[in-house]
Structures are given as structure tokens and as C-alpha cells.
Length: 229
Ligand SMILES: N#Cc1c(-c2ccc3ccn(Cc4ccccn4)c3c2)n[nH]c1N
Image (cartoon, rainbow, N blue to C red; front, side, top):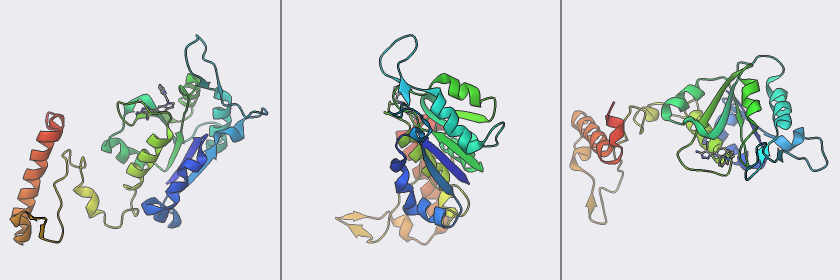
């Protein structure tokens, strides 16, 4: 998988060189390149924003640098890449969306700032490639970088070969529509708190049943809406 990120803060993504995704990059499973949007400006001040037509507070990101930046990545004409634009107005980012992104061969993330990117950028690229506006959640961030970091981590870890034991992906929260069961490890007693005896029983069937019950109970308590449909 190839991931390109366009941002005015390319250094923000240097953290992707470490941890799990760092190993995946070293193994060549995922290739990540961050591009500085200001490299596609041509004025002395490297301007990427301007005042909004129609008035209003804040600034809007100019379309020209975005067009040059994205064209430098996907070339002219049509592209099989997916342009992912984090936005408060986007579709909710879920585990299912993470799985969809993980199945793609080329993702281009456009990290906006200020009040967002001129609408004509996504309008233009919808005629050349798949475009997805995706929201990390119902709260307001200052830009797209934090959202893209979360999306890359959530999708990247689902790419075959990134996580050592694929089994560990199956029983996670949201993978089966439920929250995950509580986990325990040694010691069996810690500050007078004991590990649930069923987990020490060696009875795999009983353990699986208890874990399923815990998932349902926890989901009903914390996220009842996940049980509704
Ligand atoms: N994903 C996601 C986001 C964002 C997000 C994503 C990209 C940008 C680019 C600029 N801003 C600031 C901003 C503030 C107010 C109205 C419009 N834009 C962003 C915010 N906020 N909350 C989420 N779940």
C-alpha cells in the first residue's frame, strides 16, 4: 500500500517512522510519503490560504496549490487512488471504513487547515478519482493531521503482514460489532483484586462463553446503540 499525505505540517508525520507502522514501512508493506503543500506555491510568502468569498471569519485554503500537489502524486487524468479528505462534514470513520481503506492500494490524504479547503478541489477530483470526506468524530479539530494519523493507524494495522498475529485483530472492539471483553494477565491477584476464576480454569469453552457474555454486557452498558440494528 502506498500512502501520500499532503499537509502544511509534513514533520507531523515523522512519528510514523517508529512503532508498528515503522516496521511495516521498513518491510516495504506500506510506503508513506508526506508532501509539504507550500512546496506547490509560487509567491514569496508561500501563501496557501485566502479570505472566503461571501465573507465570514477565518481563511480558506486556496485551490491552486492543492491541484498542483495532488497532480504531482496521481499524475494527469484518471487515477485508481482514493483521495481521503478529513472533514467535520465527512462520513463517520468506523472500523468498517478502516477495513475499506486497508483494502486500497493507494491512498492520498489531504490535510486541510484554517476553515477547510476550497470546495472546487474535491469537486474537481471527483471527476478523476474516488473522493471520500471522512470525519474522525463529532467534535472540531484545528486541521486534518490528527484525523489522518488515526486513519492511517487504524487502516494500516489491518493491512496483511503489518500485525504479527492476524488472530489478534479478530477479537478487538468493533471487529464483530461488539466492544471487546476485559483482559487480564499475571499476577492472578493484584492489590486484593483477583482474575475471574473462569480464566484460570483451562476450560476453553467456558472461557469463550464468559468472554462473549462480557462483550455483550459491556456493549449494552457503554454503547447500547451498537446492539440496536
Ligand atoms: N476529520 C476530521 C475533523 C475535523 C477537521 C478536519 C479537517 C480540517 C481542516 C480544517 N479544520 C478546522 C475546521 C474547523 C471548523 C470548521 C471547519 N474546519 C478541520 C477540522 N474536525 N473534527 C473532525 N472530526
